[in-house]
Image 1 (cartoon, rainbow, N blue to C red):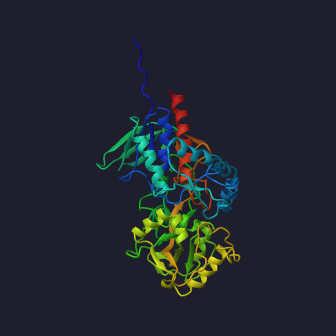
Image 2 (cartoon, rainbow, N blue to C red):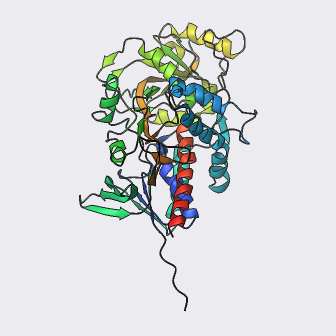
Image 3 (cartoon, one colour):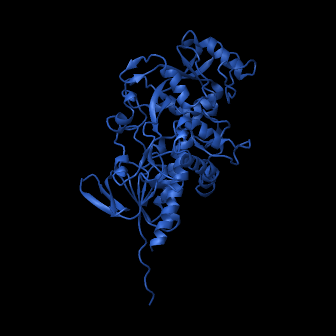
Length: 465
């Protein structure tokens, strides 16, 4: 009579955004059971809302030999590279060197369409991938992975469940304590992957503690506490907690202009050729980094203080509309953008748009140094020219700081030593982006380090069997 095999150790994942789902996919592919805990009512996290795309280079969808991704990421990280330089370089190397494999995995193994590529602010080349259809990339990727996971009997998802404590036996992490809707605390035991996201919505907690200067700013994040304190309680080291990315373009909803929760105006709108006007005039190269565009806006007086916001117009022409139709149609449906004419804009707008159009057509150099105009096609703007318009303002969007990990997704303590039995991936971690995250690198970070965390957890489980 055959002796039955012992049951496989169950891996615990906290957070159902793209990092958690990528880790779960790796574990399931190695026949390891997964329990995934999500505190929200629905899975997907902020990843499911991502609309610009996912970076990758070099890939089969690019028409250039792109070897500048690492350099662009280091440049974007800025002064943060002066501390823990070697550790940051290894993280950025992992992010960029594994980016092409991440795209291949999603396309070839998971069947996600990522055939369209755009250039975003701070990128030397177009490397931000999304699908050619109507579905936004975040939703396309997350829903595809989630569907595949739900088909496996090894995958168990629980929503509306909040982790209250990380369990340890000596220095080794052994599981979590958590509570669901009934408030009853329970324990799960097994190796742990934390992928709980950032603290951009924790206005009264971690955000107030580390960036009090951002008090009053609207945010694209739902209001909920950050989870980093659960991890510092087990000795995890924090890094870059004051590095909070304020995205330059969150829509001001005309129906609720004072709402502190804003919907992101995807960076791809500028990448495909859109321009920004402040008091009817251009003021910056729209393809500068998010940090630089934001700083140019916030150097001027806000129009309101509760919430603290500015009045910037995002202008697109018919060419940009066709290139980003799925995005723009959705924004129009949500009444965040409108189809209009230049005559409906500020009186200063027409000369500014005319100058921009001349630069886009190659008739003159752009006064702000923009060299890529993508799909802008309007050559001779007149007051009757059709444009698509939305009001935008800077918004708290992404937290670059979190628990420090290494290139193996291992959480590090204050001695820079790995904490046994726990890994981190996604926005809950820090060190990857430094002072400024490139657009398109958040989804990439989730896939790259989520998969690494999953693989290292597999090795851990196999070593203990």
